[in-house]
Length: 204
Image 1 (cartoon, rainbow, N blue to C red):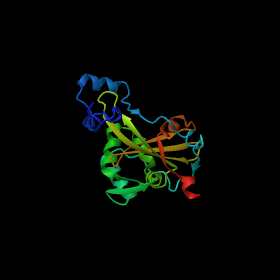
Image 2: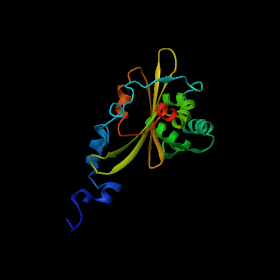
Image 3: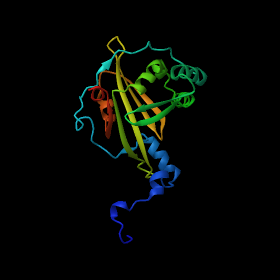
Image 4: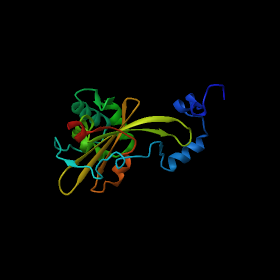
C-alpha cells in the first residue's frame, strides 16, 4: 500500500466499472444458475420502519390488450409515455424510460402478458409507493452497478393484486416485473438498500 492510503481505498476502479474478463463457460454457468447479482446493502423495509405489506391502490386506467409484436408494444408505450421517451424524477433520482428499449426487452423475454399493464407503467414510475437504491456486484466479473427500484401495488379486481417493480440503472429504465399475487414475499425482497422516497412520508 502506498504511504497515506488506507486499505479501505484499495480497490480496482476499472474492475468495478467494467468487470474482469472471464471465460464464456463461467458466464454461461452464471446465466444457467439464474443470472443473479449480489446486493451489497441487505437492510430493508423493516430497518427503515416501513410497513411489511404494501398497500394496494385503485388503478388510474383500465388494463390494456395483450400485444405480441415489438412494433405494437413500441406504439403503445409511446402513447403511454407521451413520446419516444420520458424522464422521471423521484426522490432526487432522475432516469429515463425509452419505449423502444422496453418493447425490445419484453420481446426478448417473451412474457407478453406484461403488456396488459402498460397503462399503469407511467403511474408506477412517476408516483411509486417506495423507491430503493442499492449497489449490486456481479458474482463472476466483479462489476458493480447501482440500481434503483420503484415499487407500487394495485388492486386489479377479481381477488388479484398487481405489484409493479421497475428497475433503473445508469439513468435508464432497465426492466420491470409484474407480480399478480397476494403474496408480497418477492416484492419485499426487492425492498432493500437505501430508501430514497416513501409516498406517505413525502406527503406528511
